Image (cartoon, rainbow, N blue to C red; front, side, top):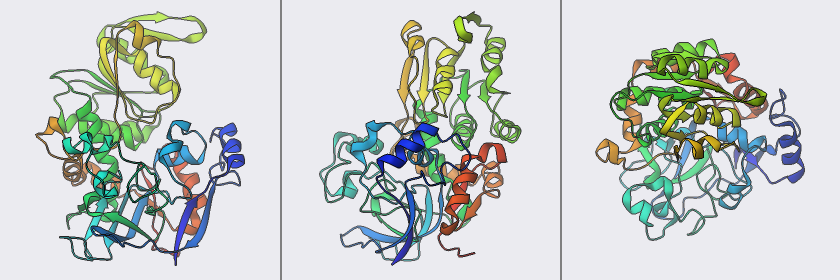
Length: 402
């Protein structure tokens, strides 16, 4: 038996959490949260190419908080299976030999459960290396699940042990700490976002949001693309400092975002009714790294006609009038790819592992805060308030019993 945090189906709890919108302190850890600490059977790696992983650290992601607070769209209800153990950002060690990897190897996980993991013939996306777009995430020998951490059969990082397929595993270099390694998966998502943005030399880019997604996207944009100015919208002081360290040219608070872009791009400001304003002109590319209605609309309203808006955070419903009126190209950026055409076919995780070794990420990693599983209420409250508290990443350490 292993200790695990399990998300279960409870319509009444999800409705209660959704009604409060996750805004009230303690809502994610209170009685409305559809989460419980359980002893459950250890998942078994019975098929070829699968192995057990003993978890060292597993991050708490914004999508996890969204699921627990009822903010996740019902669009995703058909590609998860319950009850599941959350946790898709993780570092751990193999408990079994896995093809060419011996037991004891330290690994991080690409969580997408692709055709290879499901034992089916590869779909067109998987054949091209766009594994994050896999069309087979509901079939094969596994229960439906778009990722590890949303699938009833695999377990997840918020437990002591899970199972994973060799196609998901990436070896952690010895010089990286566990705290650096647990950041590789969110860094890989940021790498994919930066490359999906298709930045041309000198483009002015806006990043709306400076949590871990926004900060890592800023770093990837500066390190991997020929971006010119990068303006970051950051709410808290420590986020503004990190955004500059990671390559931002200018940092603005949310209420000043349009004004800051207008100054730097010489755009015209249009004031609508009820305080709704937007720019004629603006940045070449905007990345929404939050997923709230406000952040999505801010990205749309700050982008010049014919520009590009990249949705990196899981998006909320928003007014898309600007996309129509200004002929914006709106594209999604989900997870990471095993081959990135814009990086000569290298994978997102390869590039992210290199970024994780950098000084800036090492500094962030030194501030990673970990909780044992039995302190899940405190951990979720901390993650919910991470921006205000100055924490970039909160994790679970299932090995800890303190």
